[in-house]
Amino acid sequence: MKKTKIAYWVLTGLFAFVMTGSAIPNIMVNPMSVQGFHEMGYPTYLIPFLGWAKLLGVIAILVPGFPRIKEWAYAGLMFDLIGATYSVANSGKTLGNWAPILIFVALGFGSYFLYHKRLQEKANGYAASGKAQGKLTAV
Image (cartoon, rainbow, N blue to C red; front, side, top):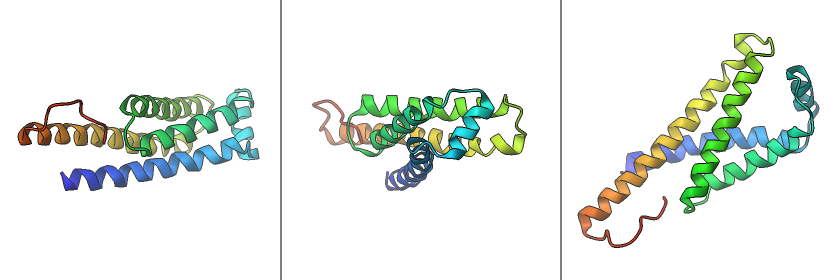
């Protein structure tokens, strides 16, 4: 259980760092974000919305508890990354411009997988110790 916990926090920390690093420039509507959105044909008014959504998603995956919100946050962050990958790939950019995003997708999937593995381990621990009386709280 300790190895899973360490791996979870390493992957989740890296994932949160990457997504926060993407959210802050979007919130600030920096010129690089504006240029990228123009190249892909998207309206610039979406930039700060996506930035705030990413930042709120990062907060949701880092705060203990609130399992339903955490599920939605993981989904939203993954939709953002997969949508970004698709958009950049279909805007005529080379593989070298969009393939690195797949590393961040893998971080997100790894964090999500380990989140559920921790929940399962915790549930198994409660069942084994005879404490399985109430609902399982999120890790």
